[in-house]
Length: 601
Image (cartoon, rainbow, N blue to C red; front, top):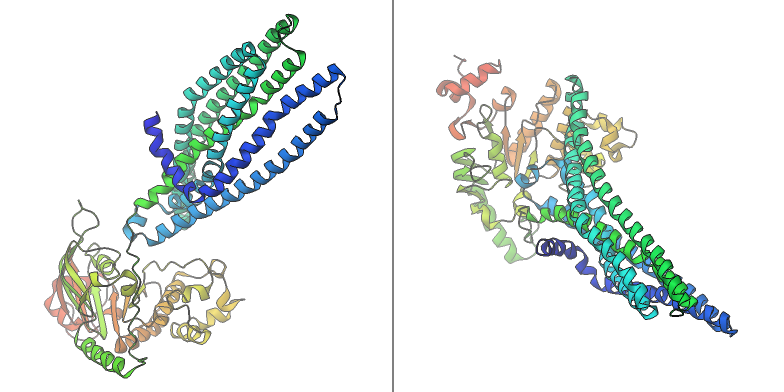
């Protein structure tokens, strides 16, 4: 048992280690409070002896009063110290996990249900509060108080001590036998809470789908299955804890009965004073405190270890490197003549070199998974519109994941401005890109918060300009708080979410604008306005779209046709209608016709 608990205990200790000085102060205060508590029965004995000998009671009674008030002050200080420490441990754990989640690679995060990850930050960290902050102190203090009580009881009477030790040993054996089961039940209960959070979060996100398919009861039962499992394991832990406490309480009370019987006999034999018996009984009654403290902290420790292990699993998530960003080169703000010459040279080079290039790129979503793209060669010029089309599973979204560096290639290489991706940090690459997702989620916060994600320094005038470009001005003017309206209460449609995402991307003025079917939920008039924005953007920078609509494809400078993870063909709309059968099939399947060039055949 010791060999298996040591590494698990070290995980929990890793959360407390940064606060070891505060823990040491808390332990010192706890030991002082315990020492004052241990002294009280002995002083009480002196009070009783003074009564029997007609001596003055002033000094022993005054000592009791001092012990009471000093003990209360020390306990109060310790309570505040360890309570505040517990909150700091929880805060540090949450900060660590949140940072790890947001710095992790996209595949690592999307591998687990979102709700399950959220429980690591919420409920799991709460279990650390007592375990990492006060359990270590409580265990040491409880052990010292228990040993101290037994030593002082032995000083009073060894025969009565032997009776007490037998009861304490019985309690210790009970806890040693029951605690592993309690820890296992608590860990399983917490795992089911995590699963519950994952399923619930996904269900609420898809609530419209659930309702339209009349699946409320089925999803309820699926979610409650984990809730019931968690409750069952929790009840199992409670039963074991109750049994342990019953044994402890019965053992101590049995010891008290035995002490009274044996103590009365020894007093009658003249081998023990009445004051000594009373002091011994006070220690026996007080013996429940260290036993209580030890058992509570062992239980909290078990829960904390289970929570710490789940939290530390976040450390295993692969992270994107956090190297400092060199920043995006600004061609329009040179400060010195030498810098001006170097930047002009860089500008000429960048005009000749493609902004993005993929050379024989192969990529897969796992070591044992078939590649999603194979041998892809693609050149994205510095200006112009490139459209990527193909059937489902062709590798279009994977292509974007590679460009955005959500996914690393297993073969070939990507280049930005002629330099391999490996020479750039993730932050440097993404400072040059903007991305509009097909699902277009909104980030928690206000409309302003969502627009400022890429450019926090943008002015209100700039925000209103891009909102006008995507035809959202009227919507914003109709909101009670305008730009500062929380999007959770703004009741934005799918098309409005797409336009918010596009406005954010346009505000960032990227070198490459990546659009994943960014007009799929727009009406014809709004789409025409948005397409005008895209065409305008293509005149000054690169635009790459994943497209299924003719309106997106027909004006593209280059159309790339993908199939089964490979580039099948490339060219303009008119050329591909003539030269590529898959492209013609895609056009026919969408029931669109060529407005220019050869007819569909």
